[in-house]
Length: 417
Image (cartoon, rainbow, N blue to C red; front, side):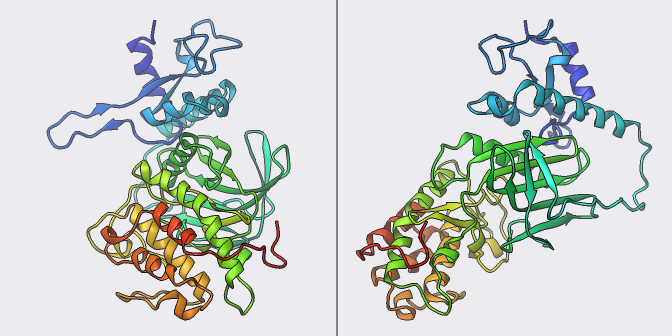
């Protein structure tokens, strides 16, 4: 028998009407004159059925009792029950999440209202050298701290901190090193805020869900762990090597030669397939830049993370050096074509040493670097088109570059695996 209506109402009250994972409010406003409706779900910590998610092992006396239920939104409910989610969210981890969330809800409910003019205490985020434990694994933050205004930008070797609004919420991201069973390079992203505050926590929770739902592909980051408390969510993905495409193929003072370009062409299809899988779902990275394209091996270019794929797109959302035209202005919502444009801008600058600029037509890459195959010129022209509708899809763009070179592939000196 499922949880009673009385139990569900009490769970909703204890959880403050917010998802314990993403902190979204679980009552949808129907607009003026309409009644809001609930999307809250009472998720089982130990499955109702013995063969369900987390159903084996010790079972509570009342499997439908409030002690075995956690308040979640529909998306996060699917995340903990589907595929690898059941492994990533064992009963003890969900129970801790439930307790933290309900305890913080009680604390917030007992606080007197804060006058709007009172300052909000700023948070002190973690910094280089700090060890953060995620799913029992220690990760030490690397590099020097650097303040940034944009969570999608990254300076190599830095651990970045972005304060939201009044400083009561912070976002951190950067290179970390696993010092336990997951020893090796990793990419760590973290959002800290009181329950219901900040806007990035939900995006990070959604990225974890998206990573679990996507297939395992060479061009996609692999989820190592995710940890959520009432005040913070931390996401860690594997980074087989911190080397970017630029690190592998660029030579000091020299443009990439035929061998480097052939390697690039061979390594791009895994990236095209990874982005293509995102695009097939109606999502897009929308933050591709030199720092987000890793090249852990000579035959693979992969994504460092999923960028802005878990945040809703909006016209005029970005004005960084790699932005697609529709991201800076206009009425077209950025989507998959924005990834094609951004990827083309990053690669154009890598192979020519020059920015493609913002003119209607760019200088052909083969004019700026004679080693570039002439067949690449048309591929870059189409990918950099101002009109999103005129750009090829990302798989076609990667395939066009692969087909456009017939140079024998030899590893550049000093750039082996």
